[in-house]
Length: 263
Image (cartoon, rainbow, N blue to C red; front, top):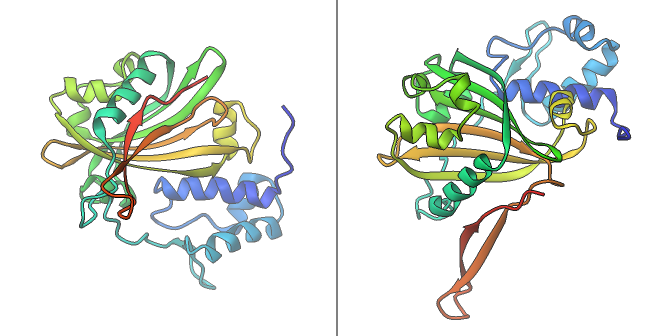
């Protein structure tokens, strides 16, 4: 597979952005010299990557002080006042479980870690509360399909670990642990593969991926799982059927999730 001409500074930016989203820099980013050594590049390359992150409002850079992440604005994940925009769990659940039963999974890592600010906010926990972080790569006969990272409150995840995650979809494990899944809020966007994702998914650095964020709630509307997923678009497609409701003047549409084809 030919490599895409992606500048080195942009590769560094992608890696740092991913690590920032995972909450690795709660005490500040490494200094320029440390980043130069880590990536084997000149100072100007590191500075270009940091300047892009600063321009996007991801970090705060002050002369003589350590570079720090900028806290994201509070998110009302799945809690719109009108109740719209929520995923239909019936179709979504069938879709996810079906995929899990028809693909194989490799568990990359499972660990109990302190919740970062982003994880704590999503799961409605206190900063530093224990959560299970699990990283898996799901594959099909043609090769890797997705790279999935899930965060589950530790008290729920006590019932399953590496062995169970390698055998069953996590939604099934949650319900076997006594969780009654109620609803989910999902967003889908695009993302360029950094060097870590590229290695796991067998694509070139800078390749386009489908990026999924999914927050799953129980029947008491308490968050029980936060998922970050990256899918190869040549092997996975997410489909919806739209149906008109009301008169033509209303132009109101509702969606029904249908099983997503994976080739």
